[in-house]
Image (tube, rainbow, N blue to C red; front, top):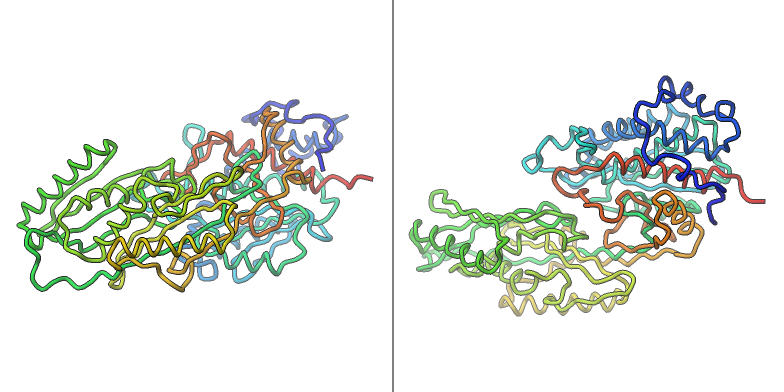
Length: 543
């Protein structure tokens, strides 16, 4: 279905909201009256709605985003069913919805919040997530859950991923209702899952049990113009026994006693740390050995940023990279690669830490595409397989390495699993049997998880309608559907797509320290989501 708006509304109106527009003052009822049929004679409902959103939505979106960001909804720290912050956000959303005459319900013990408008079978589903990734305060310039606007950007954990887009959709929906518009072909749902950054079980159950699905499902959790394909998400876990330290230190050797890198599976490590005991070396010689190794690696890779310090008999080596979302790993700098490179030049005693760092050096360092690992392949639409080692920890006598991959179509699950089996065997051989794949358990906590790629119908009415909206709003007549490596809740609903919020060329900050989104982006996203809402759900069916 193409947009049936005869006039490209975005070309009639300025591209940015008019700050301080006098028509936006007063109660929602008062301001809506200024965009009524009586006030704007001769303009269609679609035109009046577009003008209302363009003039008045941005301040509302910013305020609502700030309110949502203040809830510390870090799902990896506490799952939705047990999180008081997610429960509190649910109460906030319920009050917000009820105050605007919308329905609200929590599904599966706060796993999913659903806001609804209208009657009948679901027509349009707008999908988001309310949880966020961790935000270590020491990595941020300002407190991550105290949002603020500075130099045309809204800052705070979740402003881009995914609370700002959620606020855009909610405000667009509320303003349509204020103008007296209503769903004409079935219910509109705003579906908020609360485990996207950690455990998808709750949203998977929602998608499996809450049927029929809406005719059209749009996730606003990725990129513009329209994301019609997503790579399959892969979680792979390796481990090695730490081993018992020898009673007598090995002469001339350093002993690795702890190692850490990364914060969570879907972020490239921005920092990595290796703790070493001088053991068979005098403390001064141990410190000198580590500094010499750093100097040698610096000659090979001038971008190396490393610190070395001594604490008693221990030497602490820290490397610093650039943390980015794992789906765009090539845009960052993996600090774990650098740590392993330095460790490779150190005289280490044999143990699990040394074995795992050797595995990183041999099979991951400098390679985003799985070529060293022997798993590389690519697809014309979806691009190359991406491989990123992201989390390294020592726990309960074991050294664990979490690896995130994004796989395109082109290999079925059986063939891809066979390639991982072969890669695990190579790693074991590289390390004398020390490094092995973890079997069983949940994905990200040990078990292997291989997700399927998701592809929508690029010639169907949903994709063509959204692409038409984007082309007119952004004046990009040649825009085409795209594929991304990231995985969003869209993949849980057949034929669904992503529509924003990131524009081509944007630097994605959603999983990085000091996350931010431009006010221009929030404004444009709100206007395009509003038009999609009107076209797909508020317009009467064609006769």
